[in-house]
Length: 476
Image (cartoon, rainbow, N blue to C red; front, side, top):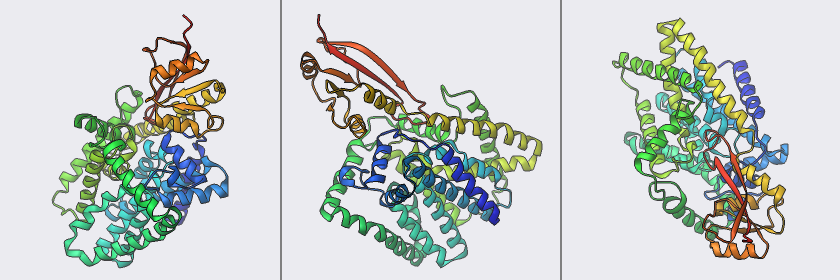
């Protein structure tokens, strides 16, 4: 890319993210990272283990400079979006001479990537490092370049401190290159160096024993209790598969799904046409031998897909499919360019019509994202109504979310393990019960108010519909 093109891309990335920055904590995970930007401490679940130390150090540093949570995370997201798009362009130009404009649009204005670039989360920064590492790997493998091999290893080490769950993506590169043991060793050495740089300060701050206990507790919890994988989630394989497809197609690519706006159907037509064209392009060029590094990266994508499907919360959190999106974007870009080469009128028609609906979907979701999520709306409601004569009855995560906000940190919280009899006894003493679930079995409680809160699940699937019930003692 020319220097002025890089500058323009950087400005667009930063400004578009700042334009749609948010100034509220939309869910429990965002809350933890918001708290970590003020006080990074995994012992307080700020954030949860594995700590995401590199990301938290960066957000803490930026927050001290700019003084705004929304701007801090939008700046990180803008930088990450720039890195993703910039290195995708560099990968594209290794294999294709065509213009990368459609790839830039699909990457920069992708609905899920755009949303994640303003969310208080490390995923988009982790994806930027993943794409960067892929470019360094391709360059070092094709050109036998030792310097980019070192950059590849170092980037992997930094990635471990940003999004540890992305590391399985690169597992095939370690186990498959048996004839390149020296290169694998060099990459591992530099990955270790990068990991030590961020891990040692974190270890000294947290303590060896605390770190060890946290690691055991959260590893067991992720895989056996709350992680959302096949060992801890009751959803069947068919449900997980359908959710994976929806996450990729609807959330990740802006395609049509049940109950989505009709404009996403137009986007879907363009994406399907691009996919068919891409397959046709591959068939026509089947005589060309697929390069070794492309086969290895294909194995990486497959490896991560299996990891996410089996051991990540793929049912409720579409962000876990993000590492697949850059490579799907390249595939769709190939197809769209192939259509344009065969028929410019058809190609530009698809570009303009489907591109407009794609941008509309993304921009509309980002506009909705600026409004508080359902849980944040409930929090606002509680802040305006709560007094010393109230108790909040919710699950543990919701109680944690409420208690970390101004005006709600001193109230009496009860989780769903509390018996109905205990609630009825409190009501008899004049306590008002603010419940996050309906209590039809409580004979001595009277429902006096039901308030519904909602946000678009394609903005955030977690707690997209919530109801707050207010109960007092039954005088009958």
